[in-house]
Image 1 (cartoon, rainbow, N blue to C red):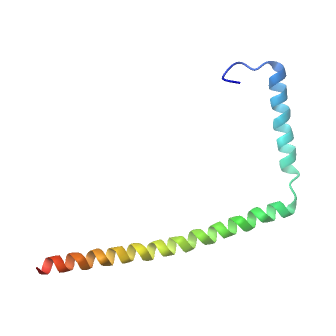
Image 2 (cartoon, rainbow, N blue to C red):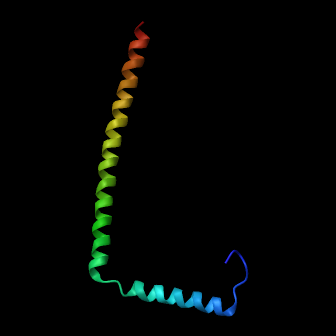
Image 3 (spheres, rainbow, N blue to C red):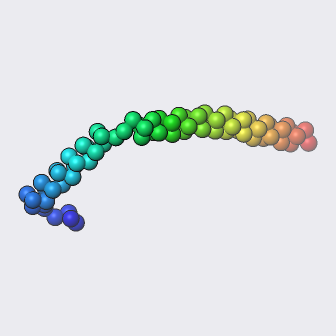
Amino acid sequence: MAGGKETPRQKMIGMMYLVLTALLALNVSKEILDAFITINDGLETTKVTFDGKLSQQYAAFNASYMDKHHFDDRG
């Protein structure tokens, strides 16, 4: 399948696999969908937590930078 033309039979098999995949996706149980929702909620919480921690870290970097330049200006 290295860029060559597909025969009609290969096209049909590819389409059948696509339809099978779609049918399997439609038959996913509610528990699996709930698991994805739980994972998404956890990732969202992690994102918010890291955003807060990064903001604090950058504020500390900025304060350290300002202190350093403040001492350099004095002499």
